[in-house]
Amino acid sequence: SSGINAEWPLRPGYEEVKLFRNAREREKYDNMADLFALIQTLQCLEKAYIKDALTAKEYTEACSKLLAQVSAAFNLVKSSAYPDIPTFMKEYYLDCPAALQRIEEGKPITIQDNQGNISKSIADVISLYITLCDKLQMDMRAKDELYTDLKCLADVLDRMSNLPSDFDGTKKVYFWVGELDKLSAADTLDEEQVRQMVFDLESSREAFVRTLG
Image 1 (spheres, rainbow, N blue to C red):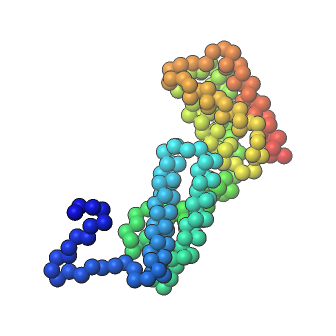
Image 2: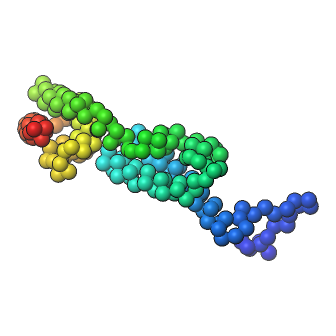
Image 3: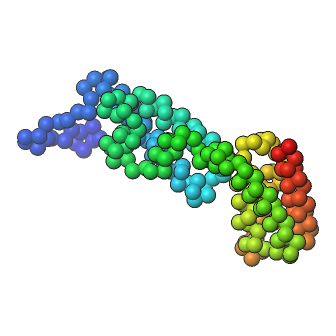
């Protein structure tokens, strides 16, 4: 029979090796498998964020949750054989450098950037607002002339935890990111769109400055 439960005969001189002998040992290996999978998932998340496959907010929420799960999973695995996560990773040839860096820092890279460089983030936001308005007023209205700066502005605003979650300025910037997403690189905004975008960006910048007190 070739059924899925068929047992393959062992070669002479070989013995069957079992990973566990009882329920306690089986739970140990299950816990190790969970930790292994969570570290791999965190590595994939870091790479996805680098490739701009998800927003800063989505990344921050997912990363925070994964870091908490990794910590909980490691507590079930921690022993003299695995005193820390790097030792566990080395033992099982788990090559996930981005995940390890995130675990060692203990927080998403977005929170690190926001808290560690708040003054730089504020300066970047103001500079990007001014740059975009200047471009529009110089009749630079093609998608490929505006999109990079606009997306960068949206990302910086998105990861600034000192802004209210419902900050209207962020919503306005993301609205225009969405509008440009609909265009091909050479497409341009019309006169009415340019006028509205300038108004939205200037009012958004003023609102941002007010939040700084």
